[in-house]
Length: 365
Image (spheres, rainbow, N blue to C red):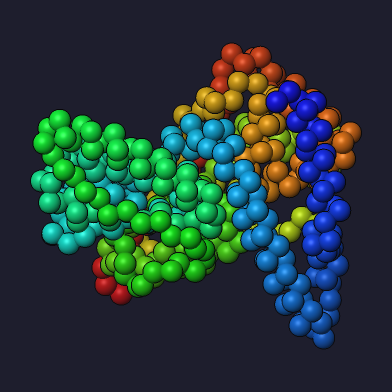
C-alpha cells in the first residue's frame, strides 16, 4: 500500500474509533485524577482498574487485527533472538537429555506466530534421541489472541507434516506433545511447578503488570527451572523505534487523548533493571545479554517502516491512529527522510538490538 492510501486508511480507522460509543468513553484524562485527595481513594482505584481494562482491551484488539502484519514485518527480526532465548531459558540439548525420563516441559508465553516453538521443535529433532524419548518433550504456547494461536498451530502443523515425510523415508516416527492455551501471562492457568523452561519473546513489553508475569513464571517453574525473556534495547539504539518516536515528537502529537497508561515500553531494555526485577522475586543466577548485531532486514524503506508500525503493533499503532490527517502525513514523510538519513538511503539495514534476561528458580528455598 502506498503512503497516501495508508494514511487514508489510518485516518478512516481513527474516525471510526472516535465515533464508537465504547471507545469514546476511553477519552478520560487520568492525570487529573492523580491529584485527588485521600477522600477520593475509591475513585482512584476505580480509575486505575478502568485504565488497566482499557490497556488489556487495546492489546487484545490490536493483536487480533495486526497478527499478519506482525508476522511478516517483525518476524524476520524477532526470530534473531530465539537461539539465545532458548539456551538461556534452559532449553538446551544437555538439559533435555538429562531430564531423567520424565517429561521436559517448555512454556512459550505470548507465543504469537509460533516462531519460538518452531525453533524448539527443530532443536529437539536435531538431538537425534531414541524415538520413545521424544514423547517426554512437552511444548505449550500461550497467548491472549486466538488469531495468533491459530497462526502458530498452522505453522507448527506444516513443520510437523514436513518432518513426518522425512521420517517415513528413514522409517522413524517422532511424536511430540504440543498444547495451545488462550490465557493471560499475568495469571498463568497452570499448576505450581509445571515447567522446566519458560520463554517469552518480546511479550513482556505488552503486559500491564510485567512483575505479575515474573511472579507467575516463578510459581509455575519447577525448582531449578529457568525463565528467559527478550525486550528491545532503548530507542537511541533501536533505530526503527527512534525514527518513529522522534518523528511523532517533531511533527505530530505524542500525547494522544484516551490512550491508556501503561508501563514504560523500554524498561526491560535496561539490563540492571531487568535483572533486579528477577532478583526481587527470588530468581538466582540472573543475567542480561545484549544482542547488538540484530538488523531489521525485512524493512527496505521508511514507508515500509511506517506501514509495519501502523499495522503490526499495539501502542504505537494507537498513537499513529490518534493523529490528525495532517499530522499523520507529516509523520510518515519525516520517517521516510529519517530512514534515508540513517541508512544512507537504504544501503544498510536498521539496527535493532535486543536484551535477553534470564534467571533460575532455586532448587531449594
